[in-house]
Image (tube, rainbow, N blue to C red; front, side):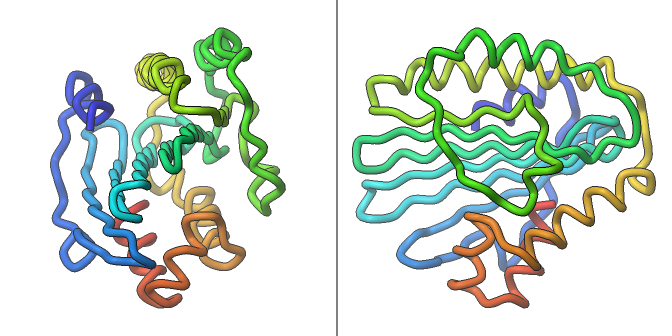
Length: 210
């Protein structure tokens, strides 16, 4: 939970009980979910999962900025079968212009790392070009760690300069993304739907993850 520790140095985090969704078992994977309110930033959720007798581990961080006009950030790290996958996606939930050059610079510094083709998805039109996805053998894990660490620092720095906004101003765009996931699906959304059903998945996404 290193990223949460980083957030705590810039924003006050108040944990919100996740209730029945704190621990979930889906398709042989055990998920632990936590959610927080980051004062002055927005909603933050953290999820880690393990399965396949410890051969697969996954971490997910979602930052839904409600008080700063920043893009929604979704971070996934998956380690399985000797492979390491890093996916950082930024989604346009902005109400105005936003300075993201530091993220471009981080992405450029790690351009030599092998990219991961995520294929086509319904949300591609709102995914920002600062997004990054990498995949390789475990020998590259340290480089992936460095990329994620620098990217997260740059995101926080951009948030410090971003314009203030209100949850009401962000609600339409963020809501459209979340409802789009529930309607059209996505890699994580599809796993939850198969394991929990559509109604319970909608509760997890609307009440905890976002």
